[in-house]
Structure formats: structure tokens, C-alpha cells
Length: 287
Image: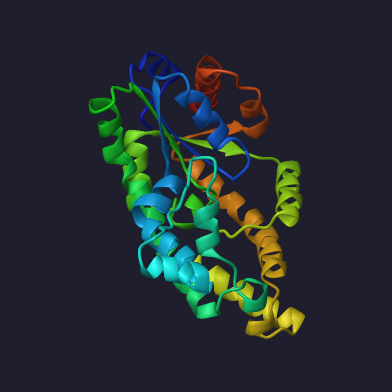
């Protein structure tokens, strides 16, 4: 590990951490808190995906929908208006809207083949954005003068790495420059996230073979055809499966770093609290 003892962590003049875990357990909250101190650079993987790698596709998707409205279509053709994504660290809706949901187009669904193309594009973008973390660490210090760095990863990081492989290129690069910190949720947290998702389902990324298997199983169980699937019904069903499948992958990733509980993270009020929380996690790993 980058900080192999609690003392090494405390003494480090430059603290660098990678936060990972299920969406909704505090990664962005902690990252925002650290950024507001003026001493931490906040690198959001999802923001990087939605700007550097998929920004043009996101804007083009919005333009394609606008072109279906004659009034807007004419204005776009004459460059009288422009459409751009207003993605932020706390509002990733443009990225989610582009990723989409498969199923009935009358209900906002995407053709299955197009949906898979977007999933594959997201995978490539996420891997690239994760690897970009390393040069951004130097950029944050040399260009902006930030001594500390936090990488706010997306919930799907466990879908694009193989933590069981000691030579995994993404985990190797990240762990060499940052301390991976798993924000571990309980079974109650998982059920709460599923309930929250049911109320407001949003697109997420799935591993290709698992997505394919889920889609075929859903079609068989419901008797629906691809073009008649209710998009929200499918992603609600798929999310409940994938969120539980991710737990062992996160746990395997934690072997590259340390683990803290989501309940403890919720009690963090400042950088000093976080420093002590991570210190305790390093001590537990040493035992």
C-alpha cells in the first residue's frame, strides 16, 4: 500500500486516496467536503467520463431529440442556438440520460443493440478516466498547488477492473499512487439503495456478459419482446441483482487498500475526522 502504516499516513505531506463503493454511501459527499477546505483536489471519474470522453456524444444525443421538434431543428441548422451538457460533480443527469435504458421506444427505451453500444462506450470511457487519475495527481499539485488528492470513483469501478489479478492495469496504476478506501455498506444500506432506486430508477453500467444474461432472463421470465420491455421495470429488476453482485467485487478491491464503514463515513465532519478514520482502517489491516 502507498501508506503501509498509520504513522506513514499521518506523516505524509501529500495524502492521496481513492474512494470506492456503492453509489449513495458518501463518496461525493466526502470529496466535496475535502475540496471545500481548499487543500484537496477533487477528481470525479464520472465527471471526467461525461466531459472528456462522452461529452460530444451526450450533446449529440440531446441535439438528435431537439431535431425532432421543427422549431428547434431550424434553429439548430442555422446555428441560431446551441445545445451543450451542463454536467457537474453533483449532477450527472446528462451522462445518465445518454446511457439510457433498453426497451420500448414509446417509453423512452433504446434499441437493444444501441444500448449495448453505449454500455461498451461507457466501459472504455470509465477505464480511460480511471487511468487519467495518475497524471491528474501531478497536475493538481504542479498546476494548482493542491497538496492532497481525492479520487471520487463511480459505483461501477468494480465492473471494469479485476481485483483478483495482481497485474490488473487499472488497480496497479491506482494503488501505486493512491490509497484505495472502500466505503462498505451493510445489508440495510443495500436494501435502502434498492428502495431509493425503485423510486427514481436511473441508468447504470453493467458487465457485458452479466447484462446479456440479465436481459435474456428478464425476457424469459416476463414473456416480453425486446421492443415492448418497460425500460424502468427492467432496470429496477436488474439493479437489485447487480447491486448485490458488486459486494464481493468491492471486497476483493479492498485487499488493495483499506475498508471503512458507511456509518462511520456519515459521521465525518472534516478532514481531521477522515484522517483518523483512515488511520484506524490501516491499523486494523496491520493486525
